[in-house]
Amino acid sequence: MENILDDYAHQNALRDVDTRLKLVLGGGAIAVGILSTAPVAPVLIAVSMAAITVFLARIPGRFYATLLAIPLSFAVLSAGVILFLQGGGEPLIALPVGGFTLTATTGSADMAALVLARTFAGMCSLFFIAFTTPMVEIFAVMRGLRLPAEFVDLAMLIYHFIFMLISEAVATHNAQEIRQGYTGFRNSLRSFPMLAGALFVRAWEKGEELILAMDARCYDGKFPLEERKDGPSPQSTAAVAAYLLAVGIIALLTRGIQIF
Image (cartoon, rainbow, N blue to C red; front, side, top):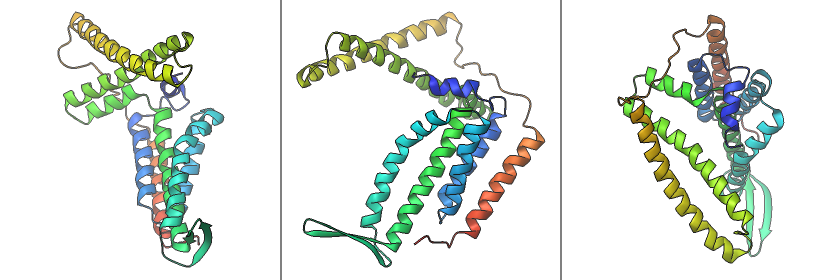
């Protein structure tokens, strides 16, 4: 299951859309959501980007919602802290806790709602890029932008070894569990350092194997990447420009709106 995100990126219905256009759409939506001073535009961005990902890219809605719930759970906790620690405005809720009273005001409620909306918009936009754009195409765009070749190649190697380490960790952990390595706290303390040590050794061995494989293929210091020669269609470009312009105008028109 560790490759499932990359699988969706290669098999989704928006796979053939120009990578640069998808990056502009996702990155522009993130920028508008972050710069918004009211939650209206971020909420609209979150809903629209989620709809594009699920209905146009045809990503399973249940899997998408499950994955989105992970970062949003942290955002909800952060919003709860802001709700009771950020002052300003009229009191809304007062909760006595021990010898203290936690008070939520209109100012703190507006700030918590804005933070939650911004996080929701940013994650939905980021998930749109992750679910519709393979990393190899992002690396090709990076090279097309004339970023240093060493930086792009290093990023490719890091991305490769992330999945290698995940695969090795899962295999080693399963082998330890079969041998009752995590039955009890004491066994877990003994097994985890062994897992970390095995991962270090396997990473070293995989690195040596990769160097040998690269030398056998006459590696000249630069990984080959196929860059797309055709640009985005005028219709797709116009649709992305219209969307970003619309959400930008909405963000400007609603910048003074407060919920509470």
